[in-house]
Every structure is written in structure tokens, then in C-alpha cells.
Image (cartoon, rainbow, N blue to C red; front, side, top):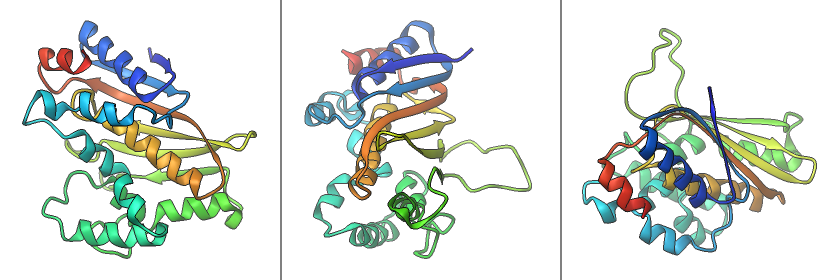
Length: 234
């Protein structure tokens, strides 16, 4: 049976699921609806207080997790989205670790992670939303390459498998994301913020209004000690 979670913002949603994990352990099929994901009023505090790196030096830094989905600090420095794509690709291709944290790269150069000529799914979505495509009611993002020879997914990245933009009658758009494995100590809160920043970027470039963020955590778990998760929540 699916577990349904409905909260106002990214923090409340993460706290709700994290507390479920603390009480009952690993959770299966958690469906999270965040009504106002782009409310970043307390973002600076969130990035400091809820940073796993503050609890465990070996943990992920929350800003890095956010930037794997949407490099929002870089976007501020760019003149337009084409400039953002070019600068991100340059940074990514010159980086040392390109196995993990490639979600934004997969969005702008799918299936060509180590080159610059893959499909730009993000730009295609923005063009479609701006009326450049008749197929703008169901816009999807693919984050994992399809292996036609096997239906067995290997362990490891990427855990975000699929995304979809849904268009509502009130000019809002929702973003749906499906995660097969979702670590609520290291990743989930940063993932929520990164997805919300991605939704905000799409809206800013299409004249739309941010709607809901809907996340399906197929397997929600704590990849740290119970005490560390307690400290991060507290």
C-alpha cells in the first residue's frame, strides 16, 4: 500500500517522511505532494541547518545535491539559458567525477553524458511549453538510459529515473519525479530543493506559475545511522 504525504513546503515534506523512517524503518512507495515547493523564504537557513555534512563529514553536502539537479547559483551568473547550458557543460566535462550527480547534464545532453551533442530535454520542454510543439500537454524527462537487452537495473546512480511536467488549467505546471532509491539522510531534502529550483527555472522561461512538486520515493531509507538522522531532523 502506498504511503501518501501532503505538505506545504520542501522542508515539511522531508521532515514527515524522515520521521516515518525513524519510527518504522525503510518505507516502500511513498507518494509525496508538496503544494508550494518554490517557497524559498528560508532557503539559506535550510542549506545550513539541514546540511548532512554538518552532522557527518563523510556525508553529502546539501548544496552539491541541489546543484546536481539544477545549478541555481551558476544560473544567476548566466545571461540566458543558452549561456547556462554552455557553461555547465564546460564545467561538467572538465570535472573529475562524472559518474554521480549527472542529472542536469542528462537533462541538457541526454545519452551523451561525456559529450555536448546529446538531446537537450530541458530546452525541448521549454520550447514545447512556449507553444513551439503540438505535444505540450505531456512533457517527460528521461534520466536513465534504457537497456533493451535487460530489464534489470544495476545498483548505483541514477536514482532519479523519470520526470514529467503536467500542465494545469490555471497556468500552473506541476513537476513529477520518480526515485527508485531515495536516501533521506544524504539526498532527499536536497533533491526536493533542486527539483523545485528546476520547476522555478522552467516557469521563469515559459511564463508559467509553479504548481506542485510530486515525488514518488519507491524505496525511502536512511543511509546513515539513526542518531545522525535524528540530529539532522532536530
